[in-house]
Length: 174
Image (cartoon, rainbow, N blue to C red):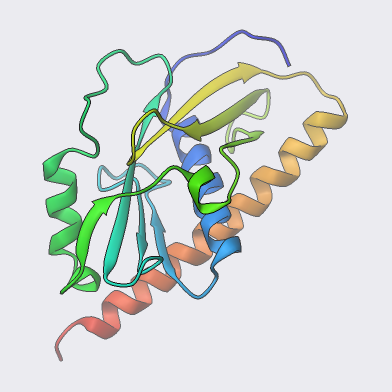
């Protein structure tokens, strides 16, 4: 893999979010985790009840984006998560760095839609922030590993989002 960073793009963002959802779901499969991998504009990554009584929310930003605010995620994102029926009675807070949970601070996989591109996601400088970058990748042994990571993450994120949709449907008054 060379150091040529292709810059921000939604396909890489979806891959980065799938990686983080997969990481959380593998560590705690009983929890509800949502990842906006299709980039619908909602909260990027949400985890309910890892810490009892709390909802954790993370936003994803391109590593080299200089406009990242010092407080993260923005108040509007936290308010959207608080309005979710699954968050009723829970405190919405910025998600901690993955490393503080005993998880990987950095992950890498092939981009879901651009196989010649590798995506790396890492803990941000402040709680609630995850950063991603991209790079060109050549076919190699690492390429096969990154492809397998992407497939596992994609499946896991889809499963997580399906579980959240089912829980939301069950929470709706009849």
